[in-house]
Length: 161
Length: 385
Image (cartoon, rainbow over all chains, first blue to last red; front, side):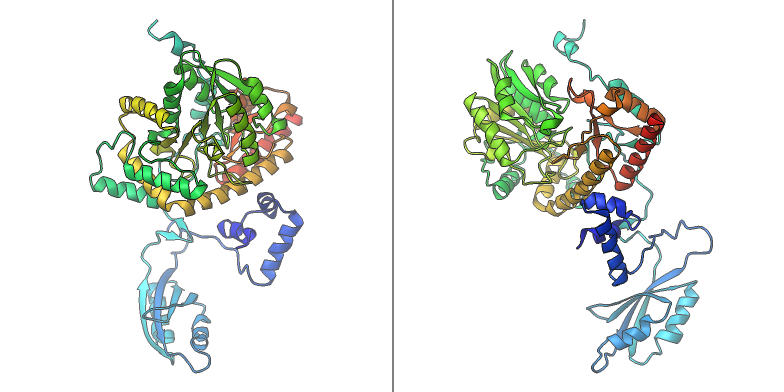
């Protein structure tokens, strides 16, 4: 993968100036490349990875992983059904997967009831949806390569040879 | 009167007091650390934990577990086409430090000399002295990229010189050598009939060209005591795992001392080291890539700040000059620590001629490096203002 993307995936806040230093390219060309990635949709969005257990304010949203078995349609396969499903704003991620079911969704709602309501009244009754299995997320241990645990006490000495 | 003259006369590291100052301070952004900021990869730690659960808590063979010695020999053969007999030419030690001590004691008669480049790692000269030898400093300069040149090496030689000690990539300068450059040094070693003690513990962190082990050069295998370990490549400093390879007779002598001194390297570390060398390649490359970016970032930033910095070719240190500031590196380090809470190591620690340099370790997260650069900028602006 391009070095610029690799750096931004790890830390989207890295300024173009620093990226230019890291990869020893002129600043202008780095800025141009980032802009091009943003425009052609390679970079879709910049967002924070949040440990919602620690976030203050309203209760953290409830998330569920939902396995969906669907009946593929002629000519368009899974894509058309997937589109009908992922277009709901409650669906934050949607993947076509191999194995015993077809689509894996991540669905978010304010409460368990909201998510349950979505499944029972929107998802399950859809034509072509054969079966769903809902797993509510209980605890996040790791996400996007980051472990959600306070830094361990083991630390390097501040100065050594 | 209780302490021997030899030990008493060893210079206590001149910057001990500075180290104590750093240790006593909180919220320091440290660029002073000589070890990776990565934790030992989990697959290695997991293997070690499992070995403890299984009851692997005994001594091993003095020389180290045969499996580990075979693994290292196989690695060297694959990687560098360098062949050692695992049973007679390979010794597992407690870090490269122990290997260094062993080799000095194994080869030096009282008063025999060892040429050591400066700047260099702090332990070399004391180790030579403790073994009864005499260190001969060979001063390298920023203009030469802190590299030993064949001319200087030949000039440094004097009667009674037994060995030349080289560390590349170098702590603290990051200097390393291409195969061509090493060939020229090897010629001098042959001409002057010197052994070469080669500390290559940073070998995996060579950025601009392929690392060449000194022992792999034509005609040098018998003359080189090749020292390496797991600390830097696999982020395993605390495990204290090193090794030495070389001439059977010298290795046998080192083993003799080693068995009386420590019996063997710790078994848990040896098991971890096996896992590292057989399955750790991917992590090594990922860490190297990350260091390389930080290297580019820190060198560009330091030069931008007016602290002239040559481009280190390996390890994870930058060694900028602070000549422009017209102050000693110790004063600079102290002021930076006291006013901005940034820790780095004054160059004087690494040789008598390095007082106008500082060592900056980029084994630190990008966020830390960025914050340190910001603080150094504030310090320098305050000085100019």
